[in-house]
Length: 302
Image (cartoon, rainbow, N blue to C red; front, side, top):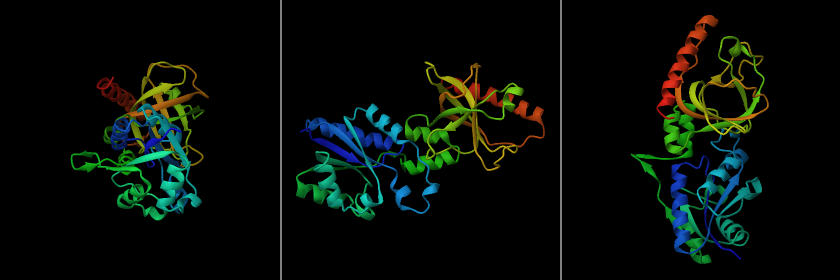
């Protein structure tokens, strides 16, 4: 039987603060000569328990979260289905019956503000007490500070909803991205020299950044290199649903058919807020300016 040193949490986005926890976890595992494990959950507890769950959007899908964590050298990632029944277990039940008996956990490294069990009643002091009773290693890891700020998924979501992708990316330590399939759109862009790929994001829970124009890097399935482009997020007056949000990207120096293909866009810079145009000529003039700005911005980060 293989025993593990573990940490638990939702780890949305797997940002710099999470990475600090995982790096400490690996150090403890190495010192104790034990492999390391992340125990996480899906879906988010708020989606199961709160009435306003429709307002919560996430930084990473469960697939992305697992990939990020595994890429950091974690030996095992366990995803526990979060249900209303599961939410009612006590901290001691979670540690003893879930972590120890089901998953062979020999110790815990806990983030500074992590709580477990029904109503989040298991803070670090109770976790430590239960671990001492059970013979488990236990350690609390302090928060990662940048200046006077604690990095958190909540802060990153806020930055993205404000269009501040540079600050969000700094806290994530990678560029925030959206992945989806290219679908048919209104095809207006192609008639004025700015053809766009319309993206249907594959995960409904994924957070869409603020409306506006962005400089992005683009990865197309089966294409080995990243391309540059400018991306629009926003509504369209001519759409059947005036509240529908469109996500479309003009990929530079690319003309192939993308319909039905998977595409990922990584947000690098916010360019401008959305604008109203009096006619097509005004729109084309602005898009020409936008394209030049995007070229200049992406040249800073090739």
